[in-house]
Length: 579
Image (cartoon, one colour):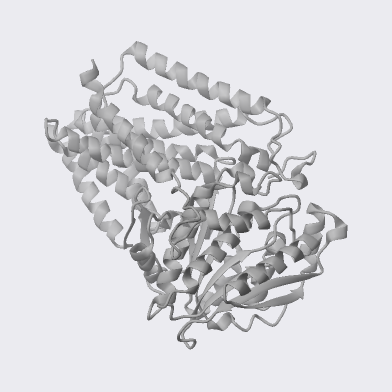
């Protein structure tokens, strides 16, 4: 009995191991790490000062923090100045809705510092983060981690003899109430813009939403080809994808880099935006203290940013606008990149592979019916997964409606709930199915068509469909054998591992609002394992469906019954749901 299932089981174990590798942060370096490397332990000394107390824009606490940061920057050899400007009245009103009217800011202050390079005529490299927090949160991650990572990066680079360019640090104010500091620097609102703005040739912004997890490159400037190619060459243990870049371009979310985008577009300046979004319950939370910050996430962010900054400040030329590249990290080991047109070649190759799968046992009306049945089964799997996940999600809502921050705190449980629902759907649709070659080919067709549509509409993100379809089709062509089956297991494990990692990242990003995003990774993982799948007995299938359906139900009811999390921000403790 075990012999029938070992290929699928081995591929599953490999996928889980790769998922763990790809989503685990690096071990934080200690204070004894080499002087020219990033150390989370050294950076944590700054985080503990930054997160001593909440420090919203305009508050006395934020003024004390600015004094500390100005002193730190000066001790690192930087020339520091404070740039005061008037707060936006509309944003002051927003601030009052979050905090105390007595603390309303009237004047905001950016800190701008310069570490001179050997050739000051060259365009500079700017590192940016915001020094203010929301009311009621000490902000260890948002954006204490970003500020501290920049300080540790400057320390590591200060004595680098190869540093050709000026290194500019911009600690903005008023980000949490409306991106005011970055608006002042890059758009001159209120005027004038910062005089150093036009000296900048590349920007790296650091953000956080949560308290841990992999730090990802999730936003770039438009025409990012040269910028991404540079990151591919120089960043160790990278994380990021052009899918994230695409989604961030179309979603309404903003960071300080949003304010710089028009100016960067006019001047051909490239940019990199890094953030981590794990431990989402700590977002804007009073519990977002230094002790709760994932030091591995800080090490991950700082290590990537130091690699990239060092390459930029020592480069003879900075990245310029070039056609966008498709890119994604392979379980944190490396960034893979390729031009947009490569998607068309892979689509053609996958079509040939799918055709070859279906042609292995002849043609005819019966084979057409089998192919249509395979396509219908995959569409049914997608539809049933979405239905079950949505149903479980609705059950999990509190009686008074969902609170956004409470749902963020419940993300790990929502992830488990969505996974159990998706697995119940899998065993309902696929549990006893052993597709023939025509049905297997038909199962690929809906996803191949979806990949085609995505290549037309969003070529930078289409790889997320094209590559799994191509690799799964190649896996289906590999005949069973002593030496060939392990190859099929390897391919299936890699494809499934990436889908599990993608599902985890998507659930971290939007799972609190839309946990059905697990549907796509499940269906793509199913394609990969189908060539290895052996049908279960009726009893085995019923047992699997029952277990996973009950787990999903129990989790959804537990989430519904749980009290509102104590991690939610004070300003969200209202009688109405927050969304």
